Image (tube, rainbow, N blue to C red):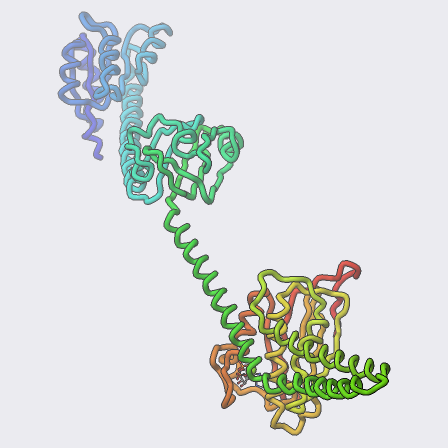
Length: 522
Ligand SMILES: Nc1ncnc2c1ncn2[C@@H]1O[C@H](COP(=O)(O)OP(=O)(O)O)[C@@H](O)[C@H]1O
Ligand SMILES: [Mg+2]
């Protein structure tokens, strides 16, 4: 803006004074206009909208004060800078001038330099004020544009949480008109608690904002629409502070119905996946049992044959007269023992193939290994690969689904036996150990001296259907991995220096109620 854009109006009833003022300011870069009375001045002002007026107070007809009052009461002219000129030097007059909205006061007789300096200062101030308000308007437009395009609803609220501003999205989301929202109590109308009860600026959690001046974020709130329907929203409420005092707040909220729906669906999918995994694990157990069936049939057949033999012995003894009571008792007892042996084998099988229970229980990890060895024993004899167990932790418990962890260990043991079957080291057997590699962790390792792992084992071992065996299914290790994941545990392996592989699983361990702690060792 160039200096000549500024118009300065000189108002005085005395032509000599007007002349002096004109001479003084001429050539200073202003457009100069002159009026010889109040009415004339007002007419010029409405036409030219000057930046500044040098206004004489004492004039016939409308005096300077009246002119000033008229200017200030009209919004179009209210921001024109008025400097009063008068011979009246008393304080009351000056005070009245300032009360009417004048920016300055110059006493007659004039000092030319003073007039030039004061006019220059006030023209400059006016110009800066204009620039500032122009910039403010631009900024406000920008903010309004941003607020209008935001997807989040925005409420500006006062200290009583009454809405002073609502953006377009707030209106759309809440079903109220933007103007209707202004003046409403946000916490009793729109942002009620999930059960529908109204909140206040002093209720939890808003007390933090309005009482303590702290920002809050609420993950899942209920927003009530105009038609009394509701939706779930995440919301944050930021206090607006002025000189350290809370003056109000800005509330930004977002409809999370779709997100919640997606989360719910994801949750359902996860549960479905979990069920499928359990089904797969169960099928894998059944198939393992199928593979071990011949051995178990043999295992049950032995006591059944013995029972049949003892039964015919008993019958013969029973037919004899007199009955040899002792021999008969002994045969019956042996029959009973054999029957129990058969039923134990069947019991072991049944408990292994049963559907997984829901829920886990605290178990002694070493006892779980013993059960696995009992299950694998028949296989071990058939394949002529012995199984050894060296327990390294005592006095701890693991929280597990024991059938599932048995399945993991059984898979590892059977893989180890299979890897050793065609090697000269089968007599060394499979070695199972338990140890505690870190406080609160129990590690079971299954060590073999078998054919070892393929070079690409790292990438493929735990993938379903990866197998190097002619009759392999390739799902054993993948099932092991999901079971361990479900247990929050780990499964891993390494290649042994002298050949063969070691597979290990880690489980979180707690000390038994009557012992101190799990100590690392071994
Ligand atoms: N102890 C082991 N030594 C060598 N290779 C192993 C061992 N355990 C697993 N593997 C390899 O991992 C593959 C996948 O094992 P698994 O998932 O149990 O399926 P499967 O036993 O039916 O092949 C096996 O085919 C074998 O190549
Ligand atoms: Mg296997």
